[in-house]
Length: 372
Ligand SMILES: NC(=O)c1ccc[n+]([C@@H]2O[C@H](COP(=O)([O-])OP(=O)(O)OC[C@H]3O[C@@H](n4cnc5c(N)ncnc54)[C@H](OP(=O)(O)O)[C@@H]3O)[C@@H](O)[C@H]2O)c1
Image: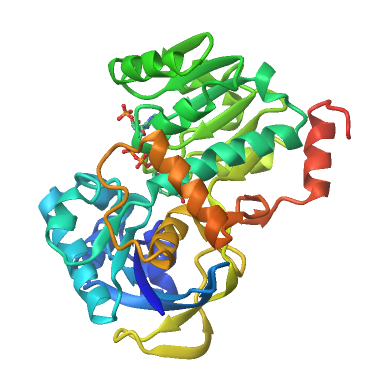
C-alpha cells in the first residue's frame, strides 16, 4: 500500500468555520481571520479505495491548514511555511511519503521549494497535471460548444503564472488567435514570445480583463486573485470558460445572468478504484459513516490531488513539481502517468453542479448555436 497526504485550506472561512463553530457566523472578519490563524493544522479526512489500473493500492489523508486565501497570499512567507511544515510532520506521522499542496498553499511563498528542504516527504504543487487537465478541459469544452479550436480566439487569464504560462504554451499551436492577460504586461511579454515560438498566432497581451475577454471564444482562467475577477459583462456570447482557479475567478453572477456561456471547472478528475473520503478525528482516526466532502462528486478529485496520488502509485516519491514554473515535458509526463494508472478528466462541473448534455444543449441554444 502506497501512502500520500494533501494539504487543504478554507476557501470561504466564515462558511467553513461556522459548520463546526456556529458562533463564527456572527464574528467580524478580522477576528475570524485571527482565530483561524491561531488554530493548529490537523488531519481531517482519510482517503481510501484508490486502485491504479496496474493494481497498486493507495491511501491518503487531507491535512487542514488553517489559513485563509488572503493570509496565504499576504502573511510573511515564514509564517506560512511554519504551518505547512507542521502539516508535513502530521502527514509523516500518518505514514505518508509524499505531500501535495492544495489551492493557494502552492501559490504562497516559493511554491514548495523551501518546504521541500524542511521535510523528509516529497513535495509537489500538483501544477503539472493541473496544466494538463486545464488544456484538455478547454479543448473538450470548445468541442461541446461546437467551437472549432483552430478558428477560436483563446484567452488565458493569469498567463504569467505557473499554470497559465504552460497552458498557453500547450494551446498555442491549436488556436487561431491568443490573448494573454495578467496585471503586469511586462511579465506577459516574454510569455507571448515563447507562445509565438511554439506556433501561437496573433498573440497579444493586456492587463485589462475586459479588453482581453471581449472577443474571446475559449478562456482558461487561472489567477491567484482572492476574489472573482470575471463578471457577466466581460464574456462574449457562446464563450467557453475553463475556470481552474481556487478560489474561482468567475463570479457566481455569471451562472445567474449568462445562460449563453459555458463555464466549466478545470481539473475535475475521475479516480480509479472506489475512492472515498471519510472524516477523521484530530488524531487521524476514521469516523466511520461520516463522508468528507470537498465539493466534488464521489470518485473524483482535483487535478493537483490526482498528481500527488499518481506519483505515489508510481512509487515516485520525488518532489516532481516545485516552484513557479511547470515545463511542457512535466505536463506531458502527467498525461503518461494518468494513462498508465487510469486517471481521466471527469464529466464537467459548473458552480458545483454537473454539466449534462441538456445543460450544453440549453447553452448552445441560448448562444444561437445549432445542436449536433
Ligand atoms: N483546480 C486545480 O486542481 C488547481 C490546482 C492547482 C492550483 N490551482 C489554482 O490555480 C490558481 C493559480 O495557481 P498558480 O500556481 O498558477 O499561481 P501563480 O503562479 O501565482 O500565478 C497566478 C497568476 O495570476 C495572476 N493574477 C493574480 N491576481 C490577478 C488579478 N487580480 N487579475 C489578473 N491576473 C491576476 C498573476 O499575474 P500578475 O501577478 O502578473 O498579475 C499570475 O500570472 C490558484 O487559484 C490555485 O489555487 C487549482
